[in-house]
Image 1 (cartoon, helix red, strand yellow):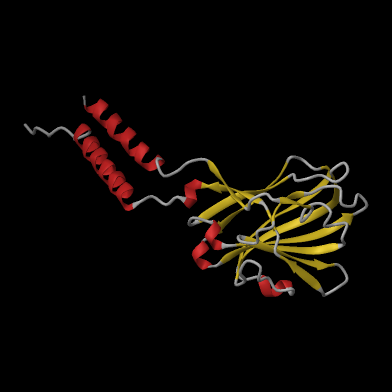
Image 2: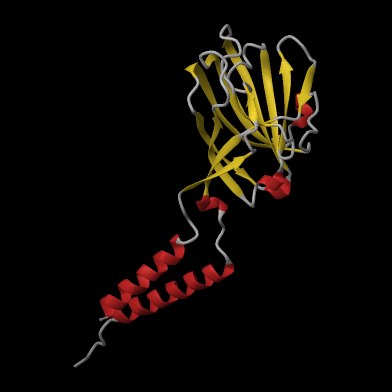
Length: 237
């Protein structure tokens, strides 16, 4: 009986601890309205070296951790072949708002959240282009989120043959381009639709009531174990 009670308490405790945690969940920022080939494909054909896009904090419901970002295939031009290039992604907090990015890239970068990773692409554009990198912990209360992409090793020539889903409403983000060999750039109110693969284990912090249940379960388990393993009294002759 004691063993069953101990197992029941242990199971209840495990359930209480596991409830707030789940596997990946997807957050898609932007509504597909048309297509544009930035940032991962014909950006290289333009000779671009820096791409920045800001996501409004309001697009996120709370503390967020993600390890994968994805872009979706949009209307195609030609065969949909990507330029060969390497892309280094980083994420920052930014003081800039949607449609408010500066043409000076450094002015858009606040605190660095993570150097996300380096990725090389070439060949046919897949239906979904996934990039998995370092964990990014983002608190929307601290400001908007900036994705910063640095392009290197470009071998253009495919030219405008691929495109990604884009949101032209300008309500949840904006983008900015800088070009190789030039300090000039321009802003664009278009958002490249982005999927963030969220880790609920960090994003969904347990409610106080959940911690109360966990504490009670742990206490009950401790009492049950103490009773089960209580040493016998010594009888001295």
